[in-house]
Amino acid sequence: MTRPRRAAALLLVAATLAACSGDPDLDLTVRTATGGGQVSVEYTLANRSDVPVVVYDGGWTDPQRPGWSRGPTEISVRDDGVIEFSRSIIHACQTPGTSECGGVREPTERIRGSLLEPGSSRSDSFRVPLQVEPDHPVSAQHTPIPLSGRTVVFCVGFTEVTDEHPRTADGLYPPGSPQTIACGEPYRVP
Image 1 (tube, rainbow, N blue to C red):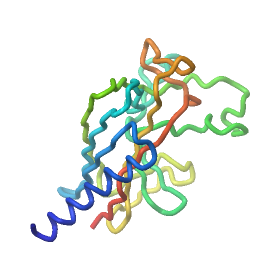
Image 2: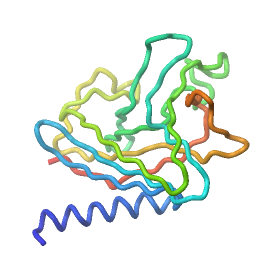
Image 3: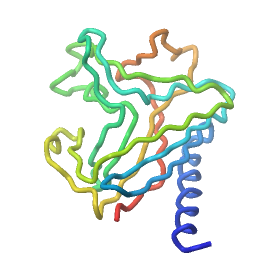
């Protein structure tokens, strides 16, 4: 096995193990690569549990503002400098006391979630240009960031369907919905 293939194989195994260590019921396998002026991410989610899970992978919408949407992939600059590509709930209304929400109003934005039945899997992919403008934190918005030489990671949010947190009929979930995050292995962009 050549050195690049061995490194890719080890990265794939490490990403699978990292995703499984936090919650063994959902396996996340991530393949990240660079080429053609983009970072490409391919991922597979496999539900190993005996209950369905909702995966927050469809981006944001607002039933009170027809035509408005955002996502599904959001870009965040973490405190440790890692650039996170996420399909998950990241919203100011998750934190009480923010000036935007702070319990004053109920947010109308909803994230689209898709059902992943027990024993089933789903694959998807997306691409991000080598220069991005982050969505989070607010202080980083509208500031182009080159990804070359940076570490990136893909994360996805999900929750088990329970009596307390059932699946919604329209597939839309409020920002305060329960969420577990699974992340792949960090990837250093050349």
